[in-house]
Amino acid sequence: IYLPYIYLPFEGRWVERSETRRGFTHTQNICRYAHTVYMCTAITYSPKNFYFGRTLDADTNYSADVVTTPRGFLFENIECRHAIIGAAIVSGGRPLFFDGMNECGVCMAGLNFGSARYFPEREGMLNLAQYELLPYILGNCTSAAEATAELGRINITTKRFAPDMPPAPLHWLVADRESAFTAECMEGGMRICKNTVGVLTNDPPFACHMRGLSNYMHLTAAPPQNLFGAEGAEEYCAG
Image (cartoon, rainbow, N blue to C red; front, side, top):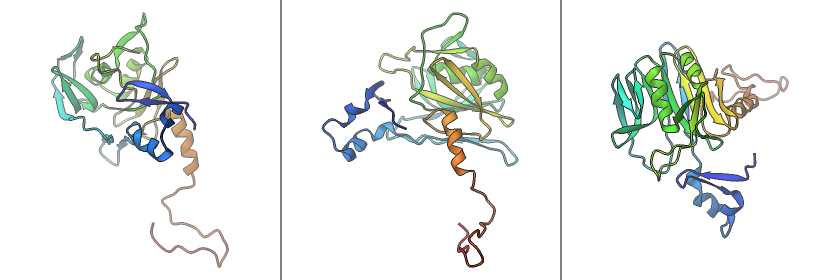
């Protein structure tokens, strides 16, 4: 997929792809803009108990810590009814969560998503800044299903946390032991998709990832079969 623009997250701006090539060889260009490529992945796993985890792959040390907020914690104007634990940067006494879970077992992770679009405040919607979304959902929802109902009435605004901290372009995996959903704020507003795979990574949009899975429908955990006749290929290892 050719994208005419590249998002530079640490500069908070989009640039034309041609701009990244001026005066650089292909290899130099990749090295120069390697920080725009991330491989963060969030995953759920439920063999018996429910597990939720994510990787945070970047070339910058964000100095994140494991942070907990108690019941009744006030985040901006948001009162969090449930306790939260997650990875966050603390700035001015306010945790900026990358991911987390609440005491009810609802989990949420934000992953890099250059297709994200945020909007001015909209009348009749619950207007939240990007950094307010995770504490609002985990602080007030008791299940992933309840979270999706809340997400449907939320408008994510362009409000900055600080003058030098623009909204991070993200999409989110929200899950509990019963179900998982993907939330993406794009042109037209919030899109919520049931995530039966229980996995989310970065760009492109979730629907593209699901179509991509069609390329791997032939994979199986069963032993391989010889389809090339009696003298055909033979299994030579377990991998």
